[in-house]
Length: 406
Image (tube, rainbow, N blue to C red; front, top):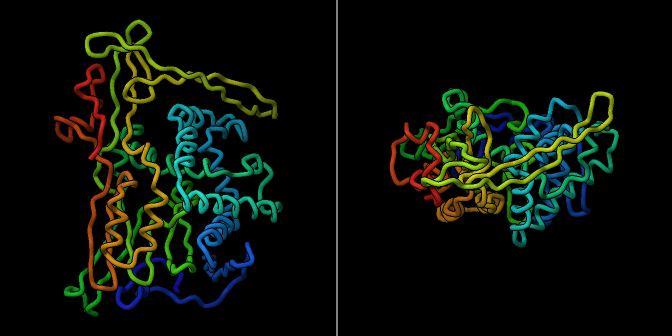
Protein backbone atom coordinates (compact mmCIF):
# COMPACT_ATOMS: atom_id res chain seq x y z
CA UNK A 1 0.00 0.00 0.00
CA UNK A 2 0.98 3.61 -0.38
CA UNK A 3 1.81 5.84 2.53
CA UNK A 4 0.74 9.35 1.54
CA UNK A 5 -2.77 9.58 2.99
CA UNK A 6 -4.55 11.65 0.40
CA UNK A 7 -6.93 10.64 -2.39
CA UNK A 8 -7.92 7.26 -3.68
CA UNK A 9 -9.71 5.59 -6.55
CA UNK A 10 -12.36 3.06 -5.60
CA UNK A 11 -12.72 0.10 -7.93
CA UNK A 12 -11.47 -3.48 -7.41
CA UNK A 13 -9.69 -2.38 -4.25
CA UNK A 14 -8.73 1.14 -3.24
CA UNK A 15 -5.72 2.86 -4.73
CA UNK A 16 -4.29 6.27 -4.02
CA UNK A 17 -4.43 8.73 -6.90
CA UNK A 18 -1.69 11.30 -6.80
CA UNK A 19 0.24 9.67 -3.95
CA UNK A 20 3.79 8.41 -3.80
CA UNK A 21 4.70 4.75 -3.58
CA UNK A 22 6.64 3.35 -0.67
CA UNK A 23 10.23 3.49 -1.82
CA UNK A 24 11.67 1.32 0.90
CA UNK A 25 11.38 0.07 4.43
CA UNK A 26 13.26 1.88 7.15
CA UNK A 27 13.10 -0.83 9.78
CA UNK A 28 10.98 -3.42 11.47
CA UNK A 29 9.66 -4.24 14.90
CA UNK A 30 8.03 -7.23 16.42
CA UNK A 31 5.80 -7.64 19.41
CA UNK A 32 4.20 -11.05 19.84
CA UNK A 33 5.68 -13.86 17.74
CA UNK A 34 2.80 -13.62 15.27
CA UNK A 35 3.17 -9.87 14.67
CA UNK A 36 5.46 -7.82 12.45
CA UNK A 37 5.73 -4.05 11.99
CA UNK A 38 7.43 -2.70 8.87
CA UNK A 39 8.21 1.02 8.90
CA UNK A 40 8.33 2.83 5.57
CA UNK A 41 10.51 5.82 4.75
CA UNK A 42 7.80 8.25 5.93
CA UNK A 43 7.65 6.65 9.35
CA UNK A 44 4.33 4.90 8.74
CA UNK A 45 3.98 1.45 10.35
CA UNK A 46 2.61 -1.41 8.25
CA UNK A 47 1.38 -3.89 10.83
CA UNK A 48 0.82 -7.59 10.16
CA UNK A 49 -0.78 -9.90 12.71
CA UNK A 50 -2.61 -13.21 12.79
CA UNK A 51 -5.46 -12.00 14.99
CA UNK A 52 -7.10 -8.84 16.28
CA UNK A 53 -5.30 -8.94 19.63
CA UNK A 54 -1.89 -9.01 17.96
CA UNK A 55 -2.86 -6.18 15.60
CA UNK A 56 -4.00 -3.98 18.48
CA UNK A 57 -0.91 -4.84 20.55
CA UNK A 58 1.32 -3.81 17.66
CA UNK A 59 -0.75 -0.67 17.00
CA UNK A 60 -0.15 0.42 20.60
CA UNK A 61 3.54 -0.46 20.33
CA UNK A 62 3.87 1.55 17.11
CA UNK A 63 2.23 4.67 18.56
CA UNK A 64 4.61 4.57 21.51
CA UNK A 65 7.62 4.05 19.25
CA UNK A 66 6.69 7.06 17.14
CA UNK A 67 5.26 9.44 19.76
CA UNK A 68 5.69 7.85 23.18
CA UNK A 69 6.32 11.01 25.17
CA UNK A 70 3.40 12.82 23.58
CA UNK A 71 1.03 9.89 24.16
CA UNK A 72 2.00 9.74 27.82
CA UNK A 73 1.50 13.49 28.19
CA UNK A 74 -1.97 13.26 26.65
CA UNK A 75 -2.94 10.37 28.92
CA UNK A 76 -1.54 12.14 31.98
CA UNK A 77 -3.59 15.22 31.13
CA UNK A 78 -6.71 13.10 30.58
CA UNK A 79 -6.25 11.66 34.08
CA UNK A 80 -6.41 15.18 35.50
CA UNK A 81 -3.04 14.63 37.16
CA UNK A 82 -0.67 16.63 34.95
CA UNK A 83 0.10 19.16 37.71
CA UNK A 84 1.00 16.27 39.99
CA UNK A 85 3.30 14.67 37.43
CA UNK A 86 4.91 17.79 35.96
CA UNK A 87 4.32 21.49 36.65
CA UNK A 88 1.79 23.75 38.44
CA UNK A 89 0.89 25.33 35.10
CA UNK A 90 -1.29 22.26 34.39
CA UNK A 91 -3.53 22.90 37.39
CA UNK A 92 -6.28 24.70 35.44
CA UNK A 93 -6.43 21.80 33.00
CA UNK A 94 -6.56 19.30 35.86
CA UNK A 95 -9.40 21.22 37.48
CA UNK A 96 -11.37 21.22 34.23
CA UNK A 97 -10.77 17.51 33.59
CA UNK A 98 -11.74 16.55 37.14
CA UNK A 99 -14.77 18.87 37.13
CA UNK A 100 -16.01 17.19 33.97
CA UNK A 101 -15.26 13.82 35.60
CA UNK A 102 -13.51 12.42 32.53
CA UNK A 103 -11.42 9.86 34.48
CA UNK A 104 -14.61 8.47 36.02
CA UNK A 105 -16.30 8.40 32.62
CA UNK A 106 -13.26 6.66 31.16
CA UNK A 107 -13.50 4.00 33.86
CA UNK A 108 -17.18 3.53 33.09
CA UNK A 109 -16.48 3.17 29.37
CA UNK A 110 -13.71 0.62 30.02
CA UNK A 111 -16.02 -1.41 32.26
CA UNK A 112 -18.78 -1.28 29.64
CA UNK A 113 -16.66 -2.93 26.95
CA UNK A 114 -17.84 -6.39 25.98
CA UNK A 115 -15.85 -9.26 24.54
CA UNK A 116 -13.96 -9.25 22.28
CA UNK A 117 -13.45 -5.48 22.39
CA UNK A 118 -12.33 -5.44 26.00
CA UNK A 119 -9.52 -7.79 25.00
CA UNK A 120 -8.59 -5.66 21.99
CA UNK A 121 -8.27 -2.59 24.19
CA UNK A 122 -6.20 -4.44 26.79
CA UNK A 123 -3.91 -5.62 23.99
CA UNK A 124 -3.53 -2.03 22.74
CA UNK A 125 -2.34 -0.71 26.12
CA UNK A 126 -0.22 -3.83 26.69
CA UNK A 127 1.66 -2.99 23.50
CA UNK A 128 2.24 0.56 24.71
CA UNK A 129 3.52 -0.60 28.08
CA UNK A 130 5.71 -3.27 26.52
CA UNK A 131 7.40 -0.73 24.27
CA UNK A 132 8.09 1.60 27.19
CA UNK A 133 9.54 -1.29 29.21
CA UNK A 134 11.70 -2.52 26.33
CA UNK A 135 12.99 0.96 25.41
CA UNK A 136 13.28 3.05 28.58
CA UNK A 137 15.89 5.22 26.87
CA UNK A 138 13.20 6.46 24.44
CA UNK A 139 10.86 7.69 27.18
CA UNK A 140 11.57 10.93 29.04
CA UNK A 141 11.95 10.32 32.75
CA UNK A 142 9.24 12.88 33.51
CA UNK A 143 6.72 10.94 31.38
CA UNK A 144 7.31 7.61 33.13
CA UNK A 145 5.04 8.78 35.97
CA UNK A 146 2.10 7.92 33.71
CA UNK A 147 3.19 4.29 33.24
CA UNK A 148 1.66 1.81 33.09
CA UNK A 149 -1.18 3.08 30.93
CA UNK A 150 -4.59 1.47 31.31
CA UNK A 151 -7.77 1.17 29.24
CA UNK A 152 -9.36 3.87 31.41
CA UNK A 153 -6.67 6.30 30.21
CA UNK A 154 -7.50 5.59 26.58
CA UNK A 155 -11.18 6.33 27.06
CA UNK A 156 -10.62 9.41 29.21
CA UNK A 157 -8.44 10.69 26.35
CA UNK A 158 -11.12 9.83 23.77
CA UNK A 159 -13.76 11.65 25.82
CA UNK A 160 -11.55 14.70 26.18
CA UNK A 161 -10.64 14.81 22.49
CA UNK A 162 -14.08 14.06 21.03
CA UNK A 163 -16.82 15.01 23.49
CA UNK A 164 -15.14 18.00 25.12
CA UNK A 165 -12.81 19.33 22.41
CA UNK A 166 -15.28 18.90 19.53
CA UNK A 167 -18.81 18.52 20.90
CA UNK A 168 -18.64 20.96 23.83
CA UNK A 169 -15.90 23.31 22.71
CA UNK A 170 -18.29 25.91 21.36
CA UNK A 171 -19.91 26.18 24.78
CA UNK A 172 -16.69 26.08 26.75
CA UNK A 173 -14.58 28.43 24.63
CA UNK A 174 -16.98 30.53 22.58
CA UNK A 175 -19.06 29.13 19.75
CA UNK A 176 -18.13 31.77 17.18
CA UNK A 177 -14.38 31.34 17.61
CA UNK A 178 -14.73 27.56 17.40
CA UNK A 179 -16.80 27.72 14.19
CA UNK A 180 -14.18 29.97 12.61
CA UNK A 181 -11.40 27.47 13.35
CA UNK A 182 -13.09 24.09 12.93
CA UNK A 183 -13.80 22.23 9.75
CA UNK A 184 -12.44 19.92 7.07
CA UNK A 185 -13.12 19.15 3.43
CA UNK A 186 -14.28 15.91 1.85
CA UNK A 187 -15.53 14.92 -1.59
CA UNK A 188 -17.19 11.74 -2.85
CA UNK A 189 -17.65 11.56 -6.62
CA UNK A 190 -19.93 8.96 -8.18
CA UNK A 191 -18.84 6.87 -11.19
CA UNK A 192 -21.05 8.85 -13.60
CA UNK A 193 -19.14 12.01 -12.68
CA UNK A 194 -15.57 10.70 -12.80
CA UNK A 195 -13.31 10.38 -15.82
CA UNK A 196 -12.34 6.84 -14.85
CA UNK A 197 -15.88 5.63 -14.23
CA UNK A 198 -14.96 4.77 -10.66
CA UNK A 199 -16.12 6.27 -7.41
CA UNK A 200 -13.62 8.74 -5.93
CA UNK A 201 -13.06 9.85 -2.36
CA UNK A 202 -10.92 12.73 -1.16
CA UNK A 203 -10.09 13.25 2.51
CA UNK A 204 -8.78 16.69 3.48
CA UNK A 205 -8.96 17.03 7.28
CA UNK A 206 -8.24 20.47 8.75
CA UNK A 207 -6.90 19.90 12.23
CA UNK A 208 -3.88 21.54 13.86
CA UNK A 209 -0.80 19.32 13.60
CA UNK A 210 -0.37 19.43 17.33
CA UNK A 211 -1.39 18.01 20.68
CA UNK A 212 -4.49 15.78 20.72
CA UNK A 213 -5.15 16.57 17.04
CA UNK A 214 -2.01 14.80 15.75
CA UNK A 215 -2.79 12.15 13.15
CA UNK A 216 -1.08 8.77 13.24
CA UNK A 217 -1.09 6.83 9.96
CA UNK A 218 -0.93 3.04 9.89
CA UNK A 219 -1.75 0.00 7.81
CA UNK A 220 -3.40 -2.92 9.63
CA UNK A 221 -3.32 -6.33 7.94
CA UNK A 222 -4.64 -9.60 9.35
CA UNK A 223 -7.82 -11.43 10.33
CA UNK A 224 -9.43 -10.58 7.01
CA UNK A 225 -8.46 -6.90 7.33
CA UNK A 226 -6.22 -4.96 4.99
CA UNK A 227 -6.88 -1.35 5.95
CA UNK A 228 -4.96 1.90 5.87
CA UNK A 229 -5.94 5.02 7.74
CA UNK A 230 -5.17 7.60 10.37
CA UNK A 231 -6.06 7.66 14.05
CA UNK A 232 -5.88 10.62 16.34
CA UNK A 233 -2.83 9.93 18.46
CA UNK A 234 -3.55 7.82 21.52
CA UNK A 235 -6.74 6.32 20.11
CA UNK A 236 -7.05 2.59 19.35
CA UNK A 237 -8.91 2.95 16.05
CA UNK A 238 -8.43 4.76 12.72
CA UNK A 239 -10.88 7.64 12.47
CA UNK A 240 -10.56 7.99 8.69
CA UNK A 241 -9.55 4.98 6.63
CA UNK A 242 -10.05 2.67 3.67
CA UNK A 243 -9.83 -1.06 3.08
CA UNK A 244 -9.98 -3.22 -0.06
CA UNK A 245 -13.67 -2.45 -0.51
CA UNK A 246 -14.51 1.02 0.79
CA UNK A 247 -13.25 4.19 2.42
CA UNK A 248 -14.57 7.05 4.52
CA UNK A 249 -13.57 10.37 6.00
CA UNK A 250 -15.06 12.90 8.40
CA UNK A 251 -15.68 16.62 8.55
CA UNK A 252 -17.04 18.76 11.38
CA UNK A 253 -20.80 19.26 11.08
CA UNK A 254 -22.94 22.14 12.42
CA UNK A 255 -24.27 20.21 15.39
CA UNK A 256 -25.42 21.59 18.73
CA UNK A 257 -25.08 18.66 21.12
CA UNK A 258 -24.16 20.54 24.29
CA UNK A 259 -25.62 23.42 26.27
CA UNK A 260 -24.63 25.84 28.98
CA UNK A 261 -27.37 26.46 31.54
CA UNK A 262 -27.51 29.65 33.61
CA UNK A 263 -28.28 28.87 37.25
CA UNK A 264 -29.52 31.42 39.78
CA UNK A 265 -27.89 30.62 43.11
CA UNK A 266 -30.23 30.54 46.12
CA UNK A 267 -29.38 29.56 49.73
CA UNK A 268 -26.48 27.32 48.75
CA UNK A 269 -28.49 25.70 45.97
CA UNK A 270 -30.11 26.92 42.75
CA UNK A 271 -33.57 28.00 41.65
CA UNK A 272 -35.54 25.17 40.06
CA UNK A 273 -39.21 25.14 39.02
CA UNK A 274 -40.15 27.84 41.52
CA UNK A 275 -38.31 26.19 44.39
CA UNK A 276 -34.71 25.67 45.51
CA UNK A 277 -32.76 22.54 44.67
CA UNK A 278 -29.49 21.42 46.26
CA UNK A 279 -26.35 20.69 44.29
CA UNK A 280 -24.79 17.27 44.51
CA UNK A 281 -21.19 17.79 45.58
CA UNK A 282 -17.99 15.80 45.56
CA UNK A 283 -14.68 16.90 47.06
CA UNK A 284 -11.65 15.83 45.04
CA UNK A 285 -8.00 16.07 46.06
CA UNK A 286 -5.59 17.47 43.49
CA UNK A 287 -1.87 17.02 44.02
CA UNK A 288 0.40 19.75 42.65
CA UNK A 289 4.13 19.45 42.09
CA UNK A 290 5.88 22.64 43.12
CA UNK A 291 8.81 24.04 41.18
CA UNK A 292 11.20 22.75 43.86
CA UNK A 293 9.83 19.21 43.44
CA UNK A 294 7.82 19.10 46.67
CA UNK A 295 4.11 18.40 46.63
CA UNK A 296 1.06 20.22 47.90
CA UNK A 297 -2.61 19.24 47.85
CA UNK A 298 -5.59 21.32 46.78
CA UNK A 299 -9.25 20.51 47.31
CA UNK A 300 -11.62 20.83 44.37
CA UNK A 301 -15.32 20.78 45.19
CA UNK A 302 -17.27 19.65 42.14
CA UNK A 303 -20.93 20.70 42.14
CA UNK A 304 -23.53 19.18 39.86
CA UNK A 305 -27.01 20.41 39.03
CA UNK A 306 -29.61 18.34 37.21
CA UNK A 307 -28.00 19.62 34.02
CA UNK A 308 -24.40 18.61 34.68
CA UNK A 309 -21.26 19.93 36.37
CA UNK A 310 -20.90 23.60 37.27
CA UNK A 311 -18.09 24.98 35.11
CA UNK A 312 -18.20 28.68 36.07
CA UNK A 313 -19.63 30.98 38.74
CA UNK A 314 -19.90 34.77 39.15
CA UNK A 315 -22.20 37.39 40.69
CA UNK A 316 -24.71 35.00 42.20
CA UNK A 317 -25.01 32.94 39.04
CA UNK A 318 -23.40 29.74 37.80
CA UNK A 319 -23.10 27.88 34.51
CA UNK A 320 -23.69 24.13 34.23
CA UNK A 321 -22.66 22.10 31.17
CA UNK A 322 -24.72 19.33 29.58
CA UNK A 323 -23.14 17.21 26.82
CA UNK A 324 -24.88 14.55 24.73
CA UNK A 325 -23.34 11.13 24.20
CA UNK A 326 -21.21 10.83 27.33
CA UNK A 327 -22.84 7.54 28.29
CA UNK A 328 -22.56 6.02 24.79
CA UNK A 329 -19.50 3.87 25.33
CA UNK A 330 -19.43 1.77 22.14
CA UNK A 331 -17.31 4.12 20.03
CA UNK A 332 -14.39 1.70 19.64
CA UNK A 333 -16.71 -1.11 18.53
CA UNK A 334 -18.44 1.10 15.96
CA UNK A 335 -15.17 2.09 14.29
CA UNK A 336 -13.93 -1.48 14.33
CA UNK A 337 -17.09 -2.53 12.46
CA UNK A 338 -16.66 0.35 10.01
CA UNK A 339 -13.08 -0.76 9.37
CA UNK A 340 -14.15 -4.37 8.72
CA UNK A 341 -17.16 -3.53 6.54
CA UNK A 342 -16.99 -4.77 2.95
CA UNK A 343 -20.03 -3.04 1.47
CA UNK A 344 -22.42 -0.15 1.98
CA UNK A 345 -24.97 -2.24 3.89
CA UNK A 346 -22.42 -3.32 6.51
CA UNK A 347 -21.02 0.19 6.77
CA UNK A 348 -24.46 1.72 7.29
CA UNK A 349 -25.19 -0.88 9.98
CA UNK A 350 -22.07 0.29 11.82
CA UNK A 351 -23.08 3.95 11.46
CA UNK A 352 -26.54 3.20 12.87
CA UNK A 353 -24.95 2.39 16.20
CA UNK A 354 -24.62 6.20 16.62
CA UNK A 355 -21.81 6.02 19.13
CA UNK A 356 -19.88 8.91 17.55
CA UNK A 357 -21.53 12.06 18.96
CA UNK A 358 -20.98 14.22 15.85
CA UNK A 359 -19.25 14.56 12.43
CA UNK A 360 -20.22 14.22 8.81
CA UNK A 361 -19.19 10.96 7.19
CA UNK A 362 -18.36 10.89 3.47
CA UNK A 363 -17.97 7.44 1.89
CA UNK A 364 -17.20 5.69 -1.40
CA UNK A 365 -16.77 2.04 -2.31
CA UNK A 366 -15.64 -0.36 -5.02
CA UNK A 367 -19.25 -0.96 -6.10
CA UNK A 368 -19.54 2.68 -7.13
CA UNK A 369 -21.67 3.68 -4.16
CA UNK A 370 -21.17 7.01 -2.39
CA UNK A 371 -22.70 8.21 0.86
CA UNK A 372 -23.08 11.37 2.91
CA UNK A 373 -24.15 10.91 6.53
CA UNK A 374 -24.85 13.71 9.02
CA UNK A 375 -24.02 12.01 12.29
CA UNK A 376 -24.45 12.89 15.91
CA UNK A 377 -26.37 12.56 19.14
CA UNK A 378 -28.76 15.51 18.76
CA UNK A 379 -30.73 16.41 21.91
CA UNK A 380 -34.52 16.26 21.75
CA UNK A 381 -35.43 19.89 22.44
CA UNK A 382 -39.14 20.65 22.61
CA UNK A 383 -38.91 24.22 21.36
CA UNK A 384 -36.56 27.05 20.37
CA UNK A 385 -34.48 27.63 17.25
CA UNK A 386 -30.78 27.25 16.51
CA UNK A 387 -29.92 30.75 17.73
CA UNK A 388 -31.70 30.19 21.04
CA UNK A 389 -29.87 26.97 21.88
CA UNK A 390 -26.54 28.41 20.75
CA UNK A 391 -26.78 30.89 23.61
CA UNK A 392 -26.76 30.38 27.35
CA UNK A 393 -30.03 28.69 28.31
CA UNK A 394 -32.10 29.47 31.43
CA UNK A 395 -31.52 26.65 33.90
CA UNK A 396 -34.25 27.37 36.44
CA UNK A 397 -36.98 25.36 34.73
CA UNK A 398 -37.42 21.77 33.56
CA UNK A 399 -38.86 23.21 30.35
CA UNK A 400 -35.33 23.74 28.98
CA UNK A 401 -33.83 20.47 30.25
CA UNK A 402 -33.47 17.88 27.50
CA UNK A 403 -33.29 14.29 28.71
CA UNK A 404 -33.02 12.27 25.49
CA UNK A 405 -31.34 12.44 22.10
CA UNK A 406 -32.37 11.60 18.55
